[in-house]
Length: 333
Image (cartoon, rainbow, N blue to C red; front, side):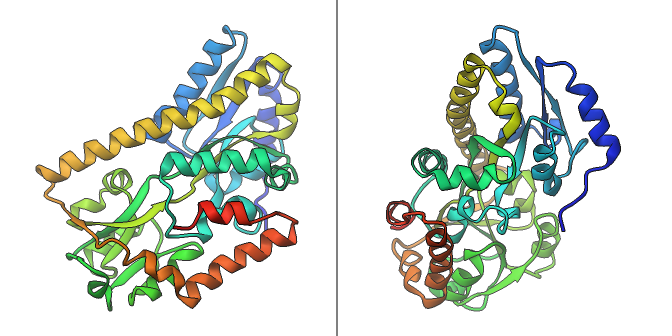
């Protein structure tokens, strides 16, 4: 059931909307997080003000102060905010097309490539935008996650070493892929994974270096295996569709260009975070980075369960008259 937005929040939003040159960005991310998402969200707001010559500005409402992560699509649709972060994998039924990457793990694209693929699909296939428009949303930009490997409490040097491991699982593709590895998928939330690794409830979790450091998983799991999962898709930077359509042509052009430039800035910062964490791992944190044999993971794509997950998305897409061949080609090795 969709979460109801309180009357108090709606009233506050309507009062704020009286100032036409100020837009609201609602996010669950704390301002003090200091990660690529938080820093580049502020970058977007600063660039918006600069590129509109101070005519317009964005006020960011941090830390779920207006809407929690799972409330943001509804809040944006209702006009409680103008911009916001939509965690796409949280809404598989609402946004099946826009969750395409989540059905294709492993896949060959890195962070920037995933963002560029999403942008091109929205440009070339109106079904992607229509799916959002049905929720009164418009995609301004895209924020993929970093390239993922496997952080473990024990060394894993080949697919044979995965037999019997308990690996954190979530989403569409990971449960089937983990079973194809010979391991056991275990559904555990992000916030509970530190303790799960510490207490040996799980042996490994799919994650990237920056997130592993951010959640401090690398305090209790000291082996990072370069399993080529590829980058997962994370967030759509969305606008309320009515707010977007109400922009004058000049301001809309600024927003559209910022969406493109944002991906470049975010990807650059994520790469810097990755390099910084890897240096820390080589130093005091003592995390061993282990190469994974080429081709071993990719070979598992042929597994019947992995293929069933991919075919599930293909069926959803074809039901919406979306041609899938070019999309699938980008998502396969």
